[in-house]
Image (cartoon, rainbow over all chains, first blue to last red; front, top):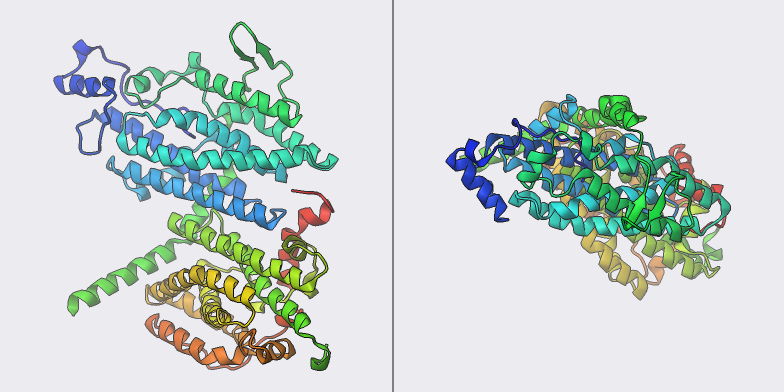
Length: 329
Length: 257
């Protein structure tokens, strides 16, 4: 997951008659469900859109270390600490595969990071919310990773080969993450009164931000048609959001927690839950930089990069000296 | 506690706390880096190191609880003791400082731990030998990585060299404690359970000497050593580590997580 509001490059879906022969061949290949590989010809707009989408996804994995890392030193048992460390390590690994997938499109990891640090690229809005109690670590695994999986499962079928293959591995790890989150929620929801209150508090704060992870409603999603034609996106935002609510509500009932959306209700006719959309004004405010943690998250990443410059320079200088010594021998 | 009053099980319990507290506190420090490393590969490596150390902690403190015989689990030992009952080396509770200091601390410890584990693999206590064998595989990787990083940064740019020399100078007074034996050590040496700490010094000096030479760093020629960690007199830093680490267990006694 973690790609929202990715602006699709270009002027919209072209009719076959408006395409060049090369573009028609490209589209036909996608329509036959064949993968596009790095050395294949691709329209510039396809390339640019993928860089935005995969880059945003990679940045989300890296920034996503911060809210979870916030609880590693305070994890309540050695086992919970070990599991959380393993999970956060996985997230950094996902960032690494995704930056590598993005590099096959002709942009370097350093360039992508530079765009993130300058505010020219985004990461998922969800990571601009704080983790305030231990149950948030459970809720992040259950809801945030759950929402991520919903989006990523479909992306295993995306048209760009390196992205699709990265997703296969990432999905396996994410389903472990979701299970560990749910296991924390189970403990909390069946624990002491204080623990139950933590679980409910975490759900109250993270429910609507999790729904925002799928992006704005389809009626306002101006970029979808071309991305879907290119199979960079397989399902619409609302389809995925509905699927997420349908999957999550029975789990919430099993936990005995109360949905912060009082109007959520099973609708027999549509075979899914009716629910209230999140506050889209809040969503857009967070994207503009006005979420609770935007400033801190960006400052943490920029500081990590700037304070680490001497390390990268030092290791590079050493590698060059070593290469020069080998060459001189 | 005098030498005469120390039974083998009491000494063994103290020794296992030392091993487990070293890995627990160092893991805590390393995990403070999460999401803040200079490059993603280092974020992954730091989390991986912290994770290995927690795994080792579970073994050492778990065995400590068994030896103690009062029914305490590894979690209860980790989360429900105060600072004066911790037995880790002062070195591992030193604050992280910059990335270079974190990796210097790691290397100084890894070098010692790899030698200690090699001896413990031959311990007459089979449980200790088994844990040491498992941990030594992880530590072989830790020492390789921390040594490479110390060399890369020591022999890197003038800035990275200067930072690594400062790190070594600042941390060196915490090295000596690793090699100073006491009654606990003596009781275990006698039964072939653990080595005399002083016996590790020459090999450690050789290993660290080779790495520092390659890193173009100068080992301080000051024998002064801060001591206290092994017997429970810590620096001011440990209290804050524990306040963080033990918060939930202390605030919600008896809860299951």
